[in-house]
Length: 197
Image (tube, rainbow, N blue to C red; front, side):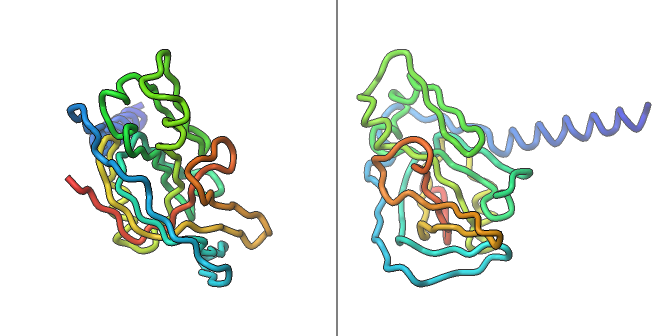
């Protein structure tokens, strides 16, 4: 019985620590990240090997955006290559006065939003936010990704990549910000990410 109590206390402690480490940042109203992501498409050809995965860079990618939500994955098939998804917002989707009217969540590698009263047009919500699957390119990027909190404004640099697994399964990145639904997520090989405030 005592062992179960110790296990329960350890799990509660880990849960509290995890929440504290990723607790949301709250900001005053105003646009915190005004520009859309910067992207330059690349020719096909370069391949990067990562264990059972092969990555093909499709575009160089840089952005400054507000983290709307984060979801960490440990048990799905993609966790070894992309352990974290970040829902990102820019333009008016980085403004707390807009975000206060929108409920945001993530699940099963998707980003969801819902509002009773649109604070900005639906199309602007869709074009100024995205779910991004984050692949750390190095140990430093992995460490930085682990500390990112919802509400932070971060700058990241890297590449949009297509992913292929040894068994033939593939995962293609979006190359545009105006798509929605399945296949609309960006897969980002993150070379550097940092809090900019």
